[in-house]
Length: 142
Image (cartoon, rainbow, N blue to C red; front, top):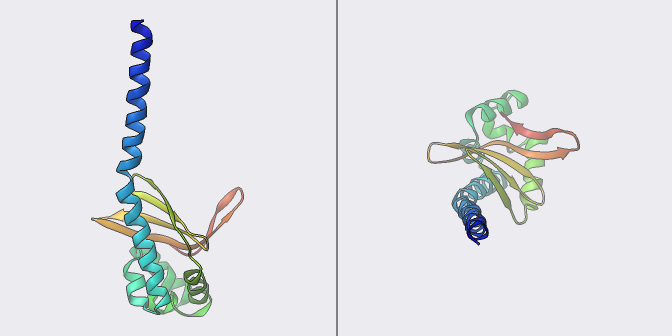
């Protein structure tokens, strides 16, 4: 009887811990989604400065280097800007997965990767398409 009671208490404790840990990630998930949505809102508005301010500095520098133009221009014009703007139009509902200081936000039209920076989230990669058995292919990435 004591052994069964102990096992039941252990199972209940584990279930409560799992639910509590899932709930504790809810604010972080919402914040990550908010950062990804703000990035795409800036892109859709043609506000490259605001979009680049939401990027990890290495990602902003890489976008600028790839386009041979300032980041603000790189994310709002040319092939990359056109692709990001197209994705911004069809984002849909987001789902976030948070693991420590990293997050992945899944939209219907995109996958966005983020990292915690200070008190918030910064976009480390956007315009990402999954590829079976290979890393994501992203328009903007660090």
